[in-house]
Amino acid sequence: MTDTRITSVSVYRSGCIVTRTAELTLEQGLQTVKLCGPGPGADPQSLRLSVPEGVQGANVQMEYLTEEQKEEALKELARKKDKLVRTIRAVEEQTVLWKKNADFSAKENVSLQEMTVFLEQLPARLEALEEQHEALLEEQEALEKEWERLSRQTELPYVSVDLTAPAPGRYPIELRYQDSAASWAPTYELHAQDEESGRLLLRLRARIAQDTGEDWKQAALTLFSGDPSVSGTIPVLYPARLHFYEPPRMMAKGMMAGAARMNAAPMAMAAEEAVLMDDAAPAPALKMSQVMADSGRTVRGDTMTEYELTGRWDVRDGQSILCDLRTDEIPCRYQVVAVPKRSASCFLSAEVKTADLEEMQGVEAAVYLKGAFAGSVWLEPDMTEDTYDLSLGKDETVTVKRTQKKKYTSTVLLKGQKKTEYEYEISVSSRKPKACQVLIRDQVPVTEEKSIQVETLNLSGGEREEDTGLVKWNFSLAPGETRQLTLAYTTAWPKDKQLQEG
Image 1 (cartoon, helix red, strand yellow):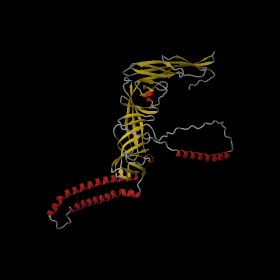
Image 2: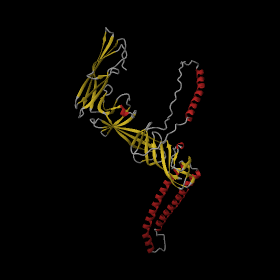
Image 3: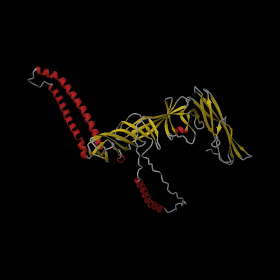
Image 4: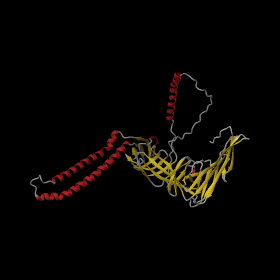
């Protein structure tokens, strides 16, 4: 059986394609070759073998050793283990014997010279036996590891293939297969620089994990944003038929229970048939293409994005690693955003173009302010908008306070209305060492009822959207400056109605 070595792995969001290589010594003509290496999760249907031009291959199969073959594979190693155990026991017995012979109290007819020679040789002899014993134990440990490795290997599948070589010689081969026990997930980091820089660094990293039952050693890694496990079948639309709803007829309790039992069996059968039909549906074919190694490239294909990692990587079985994919510099405008009606906190924000966050829909990103971790934010930009306020966490150097100054309700007799006048004061203060841009958001209620009237009295220069009633103030705040804003409006409605905001 010939060993193969993992040279490259293409990792998808779920699953991977492993490429192994080996060099075979072939005789001229037809011969069956056995290749070891695939893990327990390798898909037999995905096996692909590449051979040099002139060599013909056929009958590529994934097989397992029989119990007799497993015993035969371990036979020689078992013999070495038994022999080593006997040698260790013999050395231990010699050590005990030498120490025992050093006691001359029960011995007769032993001359002083003989005792002197024995005692002079004893330390060196015991030291030599101890060194030999330690070396044998190390050899035994190595044999045990080899036994474990070979035992695991005998449980793994191997690939059998019939090859026909045009002439004797050494030939390279390449084996590919799909394994579902691997994946990668993107992680995002936002690095905010100095507020005057006008830029934001978006760092994309990948966490790669694998449980394929084999270590990836010095393998070239390529990541794909797609997921082969998700069906690529185009959905089918069936006719949508309209019918009148007929409410269920009332019947006796016992009759309803019987009807429920009668209806349950056909429903269960229909569900079972649906599952069987889904299981029987053919899985979409996975198109495998050759990946040319290149250092640190990002390739946007027609259906997915490909990341070719630089260098060679070690990913042990059951381990996950984190690697960098790319860092993009995004133009932005730093500002402090506050919504005092909802929160007393201010937030440092980076206003960016939504197009720059196209791939970050519904993801979490770690935020770093000048290298210090500031927390995590959930990103869900509205792609219909031109810009997006990307929160970088709370800003404690700017404070905001919203105070209700007036709420007065009166009755307008001639119009038969009730009228309430509202007035709020918004105070914004800065403790920053430099001037900063501030965006304050609030609102004036809107209505679609003609009998409800809303009149804006004072916005302190704020801009109001007619459709939504949203009001925003955007201004520069100097160090130590406090800015006062006023929001005032009235609402009027029929006095026999109850007004509710919602």
